Amino acid sequence: MNTPEWLKPGIYGAVIGAVFVGVIGFSWGGWVTGSTANDRAMAMSRDDVVASMVPVCLDMARSDPARADTLATIRAASTYQRRDALMTAGWATMPGTDAPDRDIAQACLAALDVDGSPDPAESAVDEG
Image (cartoon, rainbow, N blue to C red; front, side, top):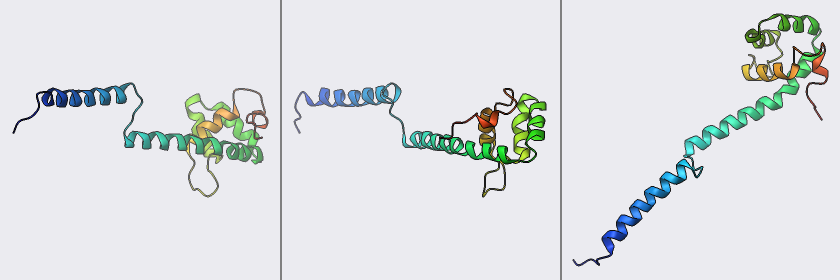
């Protein structure tokens, strides 16, 4: 079988070009595999859920009859134990769940701004 003289260099060029495009696309072009895209989508949706639950946490904090005592307990705790104190208070336990959520507790703690003014929950989040 006689093949044209240009076929072998053409095939080599196509293979090398495909490898080059793949390497450049995945390293600089922003291409990702399906599993990476799924991981990123799951992380973004988790962040959105946490952000949407912060007003619920702040409302629970606002309506708690023992709010002043709980805030005093949270303020008295060391910085790395404040999230656990907020979870113990039950403010990070969303309606319909049995256990508090650590990510929601961390976001709620940031919104409460326990080191700031004495009553930060009233103005910490713009719910409008």
